[in-house]
Structures are given as structure tokens and as C-alpha cells.
Image 1 (cartoon, protein in one colour):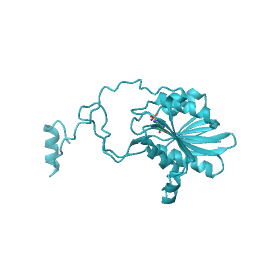
Image 2 (tube, protein in one colour):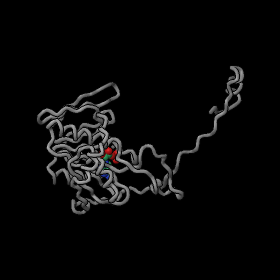
Image 3 (cartoon, protein in one colour):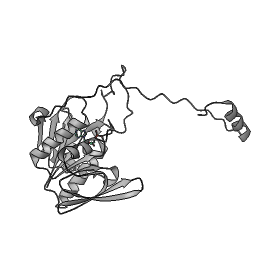
Image 4 (cartoon, helix red, strand yellow):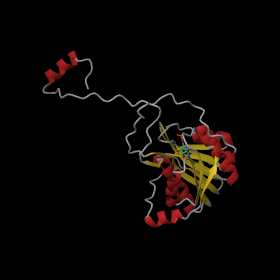
Length: 250
Ligand code: AMP
């Protein structure tokens, strides 16, 4: 079974996000980019299935700019066998990403598509669900545990009341939650090896997919700065007085 894994290049989660001065978009100039954390977990899960003899090949896929090659190399260093970069400058939207994965899953004859539960830049949490609908495949979203047995996969999901385990027939779409695993640290030899693994760059048009955004971004604003606090607790009487007179306590 071939597994396709989604790998999105996003702003590193440690970076303090800023809006551009004209409010037209998030500032990406000179900002550290990284693999979407949920996607790193998805790659690790797919590689573990291959190591357990339950998958034949792990193919990392990114839709993004030429620089997304770096992100794909990270996935290759974790253990993916090869990578496909669908070249696209600018934002990607869940529906067109899902259509791209559909085209690739059909072309590759994939038995599973493993995505992150959400991309931390758009927080959409839609791509896996849309892909499952387009393919007519079952979906196991927010996976925190996976067991493949034959033509079935058991997916443990974190739901409000606890843990829910569902059994799906393969092929299926799985989206990874952070608790699914702890991705391995890519060693220097694996990073060197990753440089030699195949990475194909293709156009979305060759897959018959149009990646032009359907949504218009009206503006990006940063949250209001927090007002400074004050120390008021010399004694309980002072606190009671403040509570009576100040409308807002910070
Ligand atoms: P979203 O629905 O945008 O929150 O994304 C959910 C998941 O879809 C991500 O964790 C990725 O695995 C995959 N995905 C979304 N956009 C891309 C992209 N541009 N390239 C590769 N994978 C993507």
C-alpha cells in the first residue's frame, strides 16, 4: 500500500505572527518557515507503518512555492521515500488542495492519504474531510492511535467524552492529531540521505487542478495590545474598594 502524506510549509509555530504594515496579509518576509507540526506527526505515522511492513512506499506531497522543497526534504529525512512538489505561489485553499490530493491519489494508486488535522496558518481543518468526500473514502480524523490489520484500519480519536475507536475499510483518509506519536529527531546521516531521494516538481495544471484562490482576503489585523496591569492587593479592603470603583480589573 502506498501512502500519500500532506506536508505544508507554514510559519514556524515559535514565531510571533505579524500583519503587514498595510494590513493586506501576514508578514512572511524574513520569517522562519517550517513543516506544519501536525504534518510532521503524519509523516512519522506513515513511516512507522512502512517500517512495520504495512505500507510499501511513503510519498510526501506539498503544494507551495519552490522553497517548499526544504519542507519536503524534512519529510524525506524522517523517512518518506520520495516527494512531489506541486508548484504554487500564494495561499492554498482546502478544496483545491483536496482536489490535488485526489488527482495524485488516483495517479499513484494510493491506499491511504495521511494529512495533518489542520494547518496552523489557516486553521481550516477541512482538507482531509473534503478529500474523503471527493474520493468517496472513509475518514478517520484527529487520530491519536492507528492499527492496520489487513484491509481495515482502526483509528482512535479524541472526542469530548473520552476516546472513540472506529474501524474503517481501506483505502481511507486519516488526519493526525499531535498525540498520535512523537516524531523522531532526523539524524545527520538521514538528512544527508534525504538530499539524494527523488523530489519531482510539477504544475497543478498537469493534474487538471486550478489552484486559483476562491476567497478574497479583505484584511489582516493583529489582536489589540494588552493593557498594562497594576498591583492592587495591599489588603482585602483595597481590593473591595477597587472592585466597587473600577469597571475593569486587569
Ligand atoms: P487545513 O484543512 O488547511 O487545516 O489543512 C489540513 C491538512 O491538509 C494539513 O495538515 C496538511 O496535511 C494538508 N494540507 C493543507 N494545505 C496543504 C498544502 N498546501 N500542501 C500540502 N498539504 C496541505
